[in-house]
Amino acid sequence: MRWADRLAALLPEEAAPVFRTQEMVRAAIEQACRSSDGLATFHQIGQSEEGRPLDAVVMGRGQRSVLLLAGAHADEPVGPETLRWLITEGMRRPDLLQPLLERVRFVILPHINPDGELRNRSWTERWPSLEAYLTGIVRELPGRDLEFGYPDLRVENRAIARFLQAYAPFALYINLHSMGFAEGALLLIERHWSFRTEALQRAFIEAVRVAGLELHDHNRKGEKGFFYLGPGFMTTPEGEAMRTFFLAQGDAQTASHFRMSSMEFVRRLGGDPLCLVTELPLFVVRHRPSPPGVPVAYLELREQLPELRLRVEKGQSLDEARRLFGLRALPLPVAMRLQLQTIGLALEAIGV
Image 1 (tube, rainbow, N blue to C red):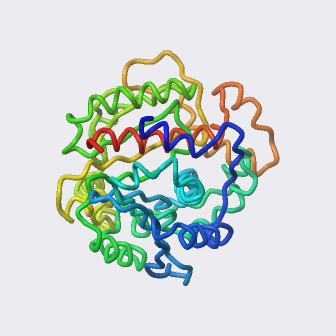
Image 2: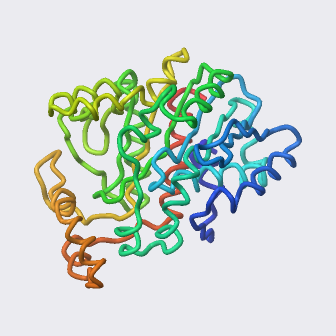
């Protein structure tokens, strides 16, 4: 059985996961590690700014280290739920993952922003309400963004940086992200690997198709370091590219907030890791015929989002927007399964 299939099998067809907080699942993760006969260990690596624990799990006995991280943007809860499921279900069914865990050592940080997670509970508790999402999302601005804060922007960045140094170098790093709205799935590939991943890209396209999704085809022409690799693929952004973008706009203050991205930091730890970022939509926008690289429907919706938020605040219906853009929530099990499959496909790409 391929690694993608083994990992996806952790999420059975009848599964109905929901968005949970760290407080809701932390004890279960600790117990899964205690009951693993040494296959997994639980670590509190530090605390958040508001004193909440920052946790990590090291799972497996293999010689190659694989880093999985989620929660940098706390309005993107699919990744954390996927990693929590991977730990608890993986330890509940060790026979399924045993061959993999003898070959790799997973270093898993399920949620690196527990403070932000709680600030988004007003909509994650009401998922899949579009209205709750539009009025409840809380996203941190540059200067507070953990993703571009390595190694020392915030106390969380410092704790993560210290912890990762003990397990470096990494053969693979996957950061699980989401997009609020998109016409389909997107995979970001760190530039050093962009032309070494043709088989991975083909496999990802097939997994997306089976999941009933399109690819999000957006050519941002290098904006903020997002270089186009083809429909559904672009490079990961970098801190220097972010600084350059804002300096070109005359915004030196915002530019000064950007340090290294997590991908840049992991590469600084040595080796030649394949670094990926998954970007799956929370709400799918119906694709319209468009020129290559121009997601027309998505761009139109993005322009209307402020007005749609205002409509919700006034108690007005969003039915017209739903009809016009074909908006639908991507079911959480579908998104989680695709995240797990992508982890498996990446493992195959590095020859595990």
